[in-house]
Image (cartoon, rainbow, N blue to C red; front, side):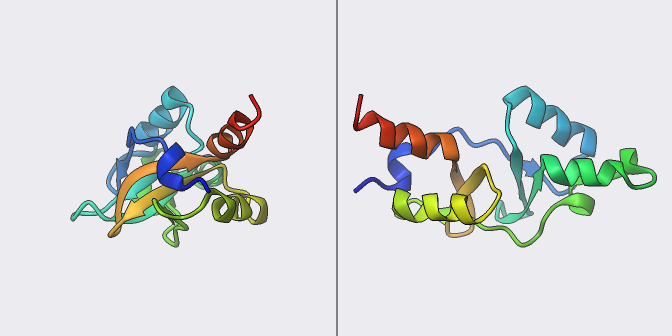
Length: 126
């Protein structure tokens, strides 16, 4: 059985709740990410900003002055390193997420994408 720790991306890209919408947008586009975890004062996961959050914010007045804290989703679904890929694949089929943060004691230690899981499953056949 394969686990999140076996395939997760360990290069951690995060933002701060005080980061501007411009900074968050730049990171998402440059790193080709669909979302970015937002960290609090103690480096704990406090939210996530997705492409959809940014698009939604663009519809509001004065969106250019918004920061991550204004637009982030505060109820974040994350997975653990010891979760099975089967468990995580069920999350990806039930929810529209493309990337999930991997946490240990509320700290982000990596991320996992739909592509990571598919690649892992396909590696058994190639």
